[in-house]
Amino acid sequence: MSETRLNHSKAGLRSFPLVDRTTPNLLEETFDYGLPPLIKFDGPIVETIDGKPVEFDPQSLKTRELVITDTTFRDGQQARPPYTIEQMVHIYDLLSKLGGPNGVVRQTEFFLYTKNDRETLDRCRALGHRFPECTGWIRANSMDDFRLVKENRLTETGMLTSCSDYHIFNKLKFKSRQECMDRYCQVVDAALEAGIRPRCHLEDITRADIEGFVLPFCQRLMRMSEQVPEHLSVKIRLCDTMGFGISYPGVELPRSVPKLVYKLNREVGVPSDRLEWHGHNDFHKVHINAATAWLYGCNALNSTLFGFGERTGNPPLEGAIFEYIAIKGDLHGIHTPVITELAEYMRSIGMPIPDNYPFVGRGFNTTQAGIHAGGLRADERIYNIFDTTRLLNRPPRVSLTDKSGADGVAHWVNEYFGLKGDQRISKIKMHKLARWVMDQYEVHHRLTAISDPEMEAKLQELMPEYWEKYKGRQPVT
Image (cartoon, rainbow, N blue to C red; front, top):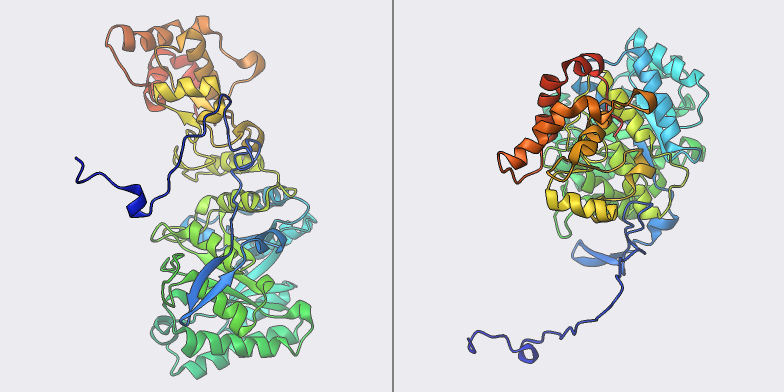
């Protein structure tokens, strides 16, 4: 034993004496229950770029105008049947309410190819919301697409400017990079002449030749921007099309998110307020990559509602909302309960949202372990991530156990059906269901909490009249 015991002084380890207390230190300067846990940095971060250490000041996040942009109606529609016009107008209205008067949800983009696309754009603009601004999306190798932008009187449009050789040669069939760049710039120039701001979408940037094509192309775009008024200056969207981006320090280009942002921001001179990140979730890195782009100097984070987008999806807009609040330290006019309203609406039109999906899944703040339920009843902060009642209109819930009783069963049923006031069913009418719950523990000696799917099945079996009356309604908690 003595041979394997660490000698702290020889090993250079510090000694940490117990700091005894008789009152709890709940770290409330970080875990303010009325907000998501705040993100705090204790110094600069360093990334090695071209063999040299480069410092980044994370405190700049407090002063930079970070914004969230939305592609629910563009990328988000590429993974589902098309939304109806009425559905898109309603979602757009809710996005405006969510982002608030300061326009944290700053822009959204629309297809322009069909009559329905164009009618949707007109009806959304007719609502008169300042934010999110309605923008378009076209292919930068098509002048026909650009005519649609002019006809629909847009002030900004995204342009698909694919930048990897996979796309330049194998998809678009250009004979050279020069031909590709010239074609892209022809459409960009037409937009500038028409007074329309171009937003170049560098598709597949995490698989591109950064110094051989991306940086020369963006330098040319910056030179073109110098010739026009500032409000027309070209924006750059970095598109991690296949989810290859990596946030870790020390990763080489083209996959390094920090290096991509640094090269464009510091070496090419694209200002932070003209840089935007667009990612995909093929490797489960979509949110952290987007937040990393924010951290290293990209002001705009492109997202979709609940991450629903082509293949594995895009950065989830609601995740970006809570990341924004955690970074900034306040709501900044964001109306977070609209996230729940949007989730309920999306379910009603057929979008599947897993029960354990963060912030909006039916069970995201329901604790199932009996010991957790006891903790939640003692102090909901113990097992609830933040004040979900205040921020999401979703009180924390507990699964049923042997301690629930008839009152707990009645509460579960009424919350499940979303019943309020006089609609609520009394516990007397659920005696069969309450008896079944108690039998699980008294007769069958069960130890675990009863899951929602089990309760749903028994509710349908033992209270069929209420199931028929209320099934299909979305629970409010």
